[in-house]
Length: 195
Image (cartoon, rainbow, N blue to C red; front, side, top):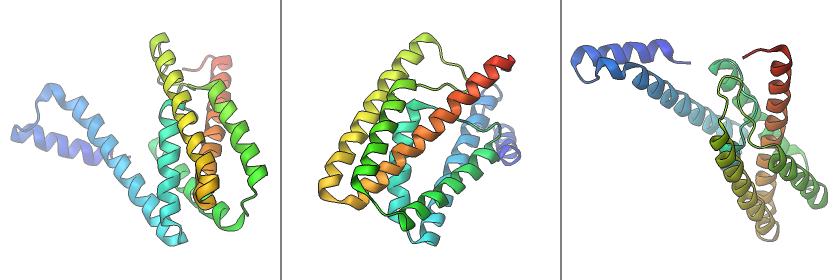
């Protein structure tokens, strides 16, 4: 998303002697990732403030990232697509929290179904970043641990604070949605022989 700016900064760093020429690609990748993360966090905070759901957005983001890190799922082909989809996801989440009433039995059923799906299909690898056997085994284990931890947190919050339980539930359901979408995309690309 910020490739041009990152290249300018890295080139300047190489000229000034602060960055070694052979570290250029690593620094460029790291700086681009840092900019992407920062802009996503800032955007999430702004959306939270605009919708009056700041703490909910922060909690949702934390839950979503904890599970998604090892679950994997759908990835857009460009960082702009990823950024725009993240912003849309935060708006959809804020609207859902505001306008859809929390019905404990229905939501809990969806959380259990979503958790089972995440448990079953994780990790969902990206097309451009396949996982080797060791990574698949490690990611599967970590994805299952993270979904169990979040599921326990959801159950505890049902008795303490249903608002937090609702936020956790949406985090789990959104991860499940992107995991399924990623699995479908991977199968479609595999059938077409696209890498």
